[in-house]
Image (cartoon, rainbow, N blue to C red; front, side):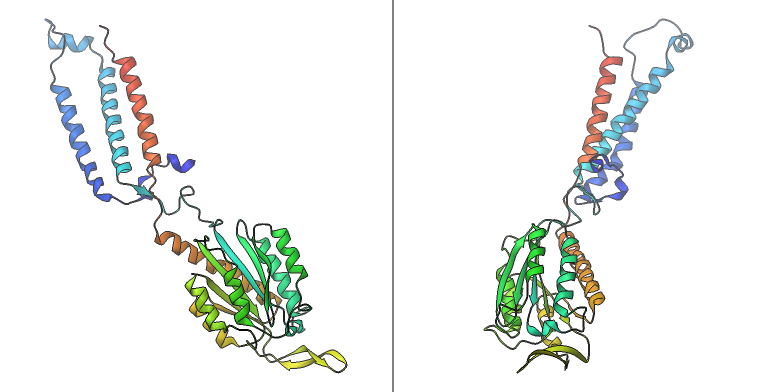
Length: 343
């Protein structure tokens, strides 16, 4: 990895910065060693004059020994920087900034009769299914499941990495074989039970509805408290234009479409989001629904960044240790080859 050779020390922060005070001692120690080298008596005695001794000496060897002394100093600097436990907020290896592993997402979709309203093209349900599949296509490595609810709820697809099966299930959902009504609490509660307890990084529910809770054994706010207890974040989406919309109505002559007032219990949806540290969104057309899913993705990424960095990245002294090792081998080899003594 490239980061395993990065020694640009100014790009790092340090968990144990007090060790960096030792850097001040390095030039002092090098100066003392250099001074001792300059004053040290030679191993061989000459009877000639100092001028003659200098004429047969080699300045190259002297400069070479000075370079070697500098290399010792650099090795010491690298080791001190490694001991100070350097870490990098933006390193690519050590932790994953994409957060692709460990995220569980459950899509809880309302399929009640009102979802057939035609203020979306062709209707709310089909538009929601289309955008949900686009959202799934944009994920990578996350387990995603699907819960369907109206007057009751069921799991259409457990959290899975097999997105093709998930999208098939999204295509197949409708309200034909489910009890009528809108049980938001039941739908949310079912979604909560489908999230795995070992998903410690992030657990998310995206709850979509176009109405208000009018059936079910559990209230939406009780279900929200259950989600909060399990550290599940819930993003709620209210689907439907403001004002009136052509909505299906059961008549003696079958299902007919009549203009009905759009009634979404936004207060409850906002409370669900607030209790679970999520957010509430209102979608009035397909384009705004697409934007909402993108915004949820951005919000979740920022929350994941915060959660991850709050626990601090791991120290990564590898680059400094690698270069210290290379320079140590180099200096040892030079000393052995150039300055070795023949007994």
